[in-house]
Length: 109
Image: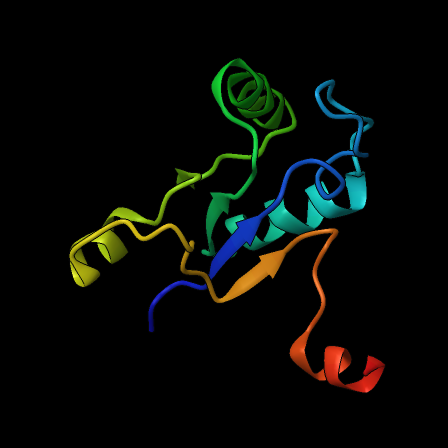
């Protein structure tokens, strides 16, 4: 069985949203992500940050004890499998403060 792939947003998810600064750590989310990684999940940092802001966020994640398998790109094995690195990150689970599930979207209509 292949590992679960989890794409994790940064601002508003791993920390409070204070972009371009880095907000306060959201410890419950950080601990959840670290536990999933320890249990074998693959993690992708999935953020709109780029350049120096992305570097700062990546360093911050390392300081929190989070090690990502990819940053703003698909896992190498999926790039090889599908023949490219599509703009949409492939994951089994997406953790994002802006998310909504399809069923909930229909219920809100």
